[in-house]
Image 1 (cartoon, rainbow, N blue to C red):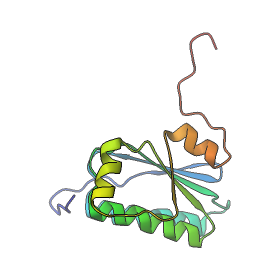
Image 2: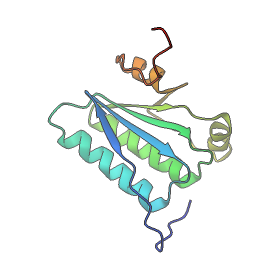
Image 3: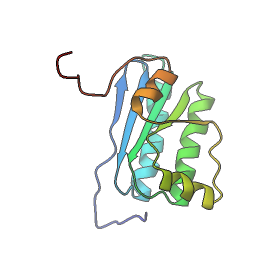
Length: 136
């Protein structure tokens, strides 16, 4: 996941769901975008009018994680923790988890959840990201 100066990838949106920030990662995340995301999340936590109590990072759309992105995720969690905010990684594919282990990366301070709904539940929120069932 290298930085391609000729390309201008879109920044990753950071959405607020009440006192939770939701970040959904899709595809390759270039180094510059990952660093900007780290800055954006920390800035939003520190400067939010409503105290931020949790950050959910949805990795379900990520197929490959390199050592740089792994380090950025760990640094996001560390920064959030210093600001009294919990970080939950949601939807991590088995191949991504295996890669992180093979790279020798530990992610202290990070909690994992099977999907975004479970991540929100871990943070004490009942927002549903699933479409409503037919007849419900």
